[in-house]
Length: 354
Image (tube, rainbow, N blue to C red; front, side):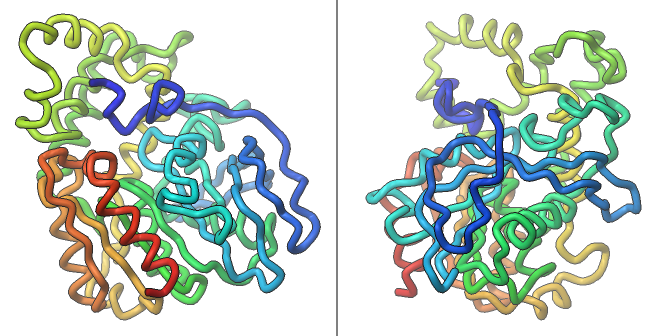
């Protein structure tokens, strides 16, 4: 089922939607959530490599109310090709995040087609958009938290997949800014197997004649990249169960025709490259990076994940003495959808300090 990719929540998990406005947040603790799309204008976003995103905007949605002590904010950045809208599926009294307890800030990571991206920049469109890193995503999110919400501290940072990578980056880059961190099916640095997938997707997009070196007038579907994604987002056993041979021909045709749409190919590439170069040690040692972590950490890993290998996250968990939760179904990277009965209560208990 295509609805079981991490890509559509207007189609169920991974759709990308945006609307406007961001100034409801002037009063200190009266930020009652309505989950509408909002934007923060940050001016120029300085990047780690010295370049900048001009007229940088960050999209976000909120649920819940910031308490008087400003101690219940949870920041949740979006995953690869996801958006803040998609995060709504995890919000609710019986879900992973209870808005009656927490002020949830779901953030559109850079290049998701909502926040500043190659597809929506008026001055740095398409291939003119500067290369970004997960560190740049986190720096923009830190500015959102401090400049828009005027927060000096977060109760927690958490995220899934590329959001989990950003969570690891948060732990190392801003170690005293949160009490807790929950990286879910993320990584501190990609393994060779992960790189094989992500670089193959990059190659597939760049080899597609419709991509036109990023200077296309109509976003191409680049179906080959979607097929590679489908092959790795779950396990062979799970895929075979969900895609019996009698429906495979129609499914395969759909992958080719729809491809990664409605996500933009240049946005896809920008986030791919951010993950490919992701390294919380920034070229140094992971041991030194681990020494910087001060937050209490729960690492959630999927043992059969073919998309983001769980070993780097679990190794880092051992280095920092973090709690771990293993999702062991054959759903692979999609275990966060298949094992909600296991994951939701564990995350809720950790957030509540239990």
